[in-house]
Length: 254
Ligand SMILES: [Zn+2]
Image 1 (spheres, rainbow, N blue to C red):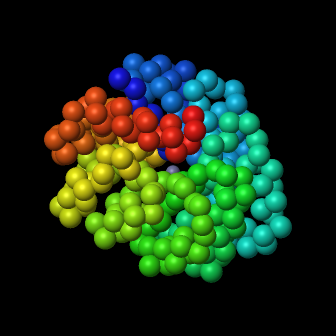
Image 2: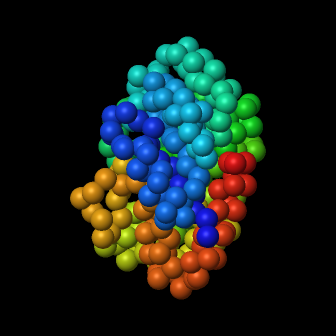
């Protein structure tokens, strides 16, 4: 059985992971590929360098919507284009719109998102989208472009937005939130995600699944998320592992 962590932040020195131990326990849990996700220019370069120096590890480069205001001068983003061309970069993101926290203005969030969609199309790379309480603005932007592939990372939204995503061929990233949400509508939504569109992620070090709340989240916890979905959806672990692995491999070409 093989599992993949399609979205983690283990590259960031900020979190002080014991990297040897992180890889060892991930491998013991059947998790054997890792995608490190960049959130700004400095962090994206760290993700790329980390991926280059670790086996079975790839990276994305992108500007998180929280950081959008810092990049309102689009000239700064030529640096992102250079990063996107580097070795082992398999995606653009995480990028998108976050109207829950609104750490950056809506205007700059939209501009930075559009820039990154353009870049992904140019580089023929898939995207890791972060969209929170902002689908009303996200879909018109997304639909303005042709040929965008990607994943809605950490998807917790409605069945209506799930249907919109599936119609557009997007993958749906599910993480530890599923194990601790008390929202029955959300749990029903997780049941409706077609296996053909499902991928697993941790968002480590965040969103540690039950029963490990309070500990730092690591890629090994993908197995906990998979086990939870087995119970919730009534599918075999082998089927969830095989299909989500195929989905990640085909989306990111790893
Ligand atoms: Zn993330």
